[in-house]
Image 1 (tube, rainbow, N blue to C red):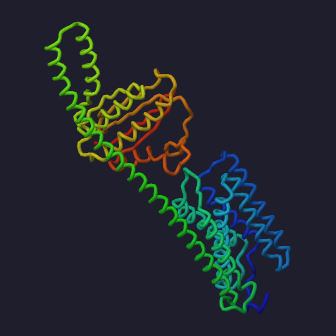
Image 2: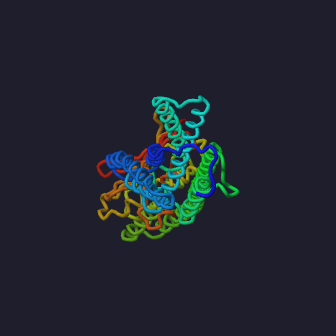
Image 3: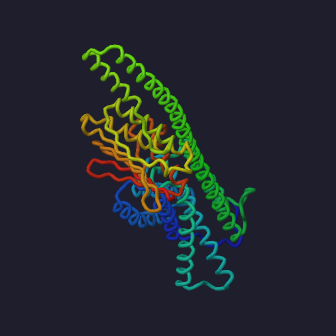
Length: 440
């Protein structure tokens, strides 16, 4: 150490530092999406505390030149606890460990600053039970506050996968924060060092706090960016569904006019030619035309177009589609929302059902009705493969380009929630049932 600290305060006890590091890990273990059994998380977290205590006391036996090595051992221990307790990948584990490390440093520094200040203010050393109370209160409040702050910054339904640049920036911020906060303990002869005992701890606590705030803001920005990208994808899908509706409406109207004209032409031909075999041919032709002229009539023109278009799609794919819908219940819902809601629900059902090898199992049922003060939309389809969903019920796409797909159920939830409703998904006996409840 170069230079001397005036009125130097005792350093933070190794036990307190280990507990603060363990609490830093615990905050993110509770806040992040867990991918391992709960019993493994509990055992890892429980055994992690004595491991960190042992590493801290081992580092305390080293001389100053090896002090950095001791801190690295503590960081490696935190990295192992987080990876084993949550089941993170290496990059995600490193990203979270960096945040937990700075949080641990902040908690330990803040508590020790309060403890030394209280001792000087009282003019005497506090009793052991007073020290314990201050430790429990400070560490407990820090844990509760940081957990409630950070849990909104991370998803508990899917992994946090930072980009390489975000991970590098987080680690770099952590290293700089740690170096600046402990600079005074290494040398007092720098423009950024303190020379008075209490002042040194002020610098340490404030620098750690600034580092934590920077990391929080970085994650908040990343989370908002992901949310905006997801919302943009959903909006793009909504517009695509609406454009599909407009195109389907035009096509169906054209087919309806064509069918109407063909009926008159067939009637004219039948009046001129009357052989039995020709009559049979005309009847077959008329039945074929009738297939394309059949349209849904629910009481809502937008829903009529969507159901008619999907009926033809199902017919082309050999899917039996039945729909019972009171379209008048959709009064007040925008045409784009109707097109996207029913389009996404049926597209998902058609995609899943069309994969079935047995034509008799290609079944889709749709019902739209009123139940009490709610409008109920229920779409059911038979499936014969494994389904993967997250804790919110969103289907996980099986396509390779996962970032560009998998927004169907999210889009449905987004629309229904705009009208104060909820979406539930149930699977039973190979039947997939999506139910949307929207208050009247």
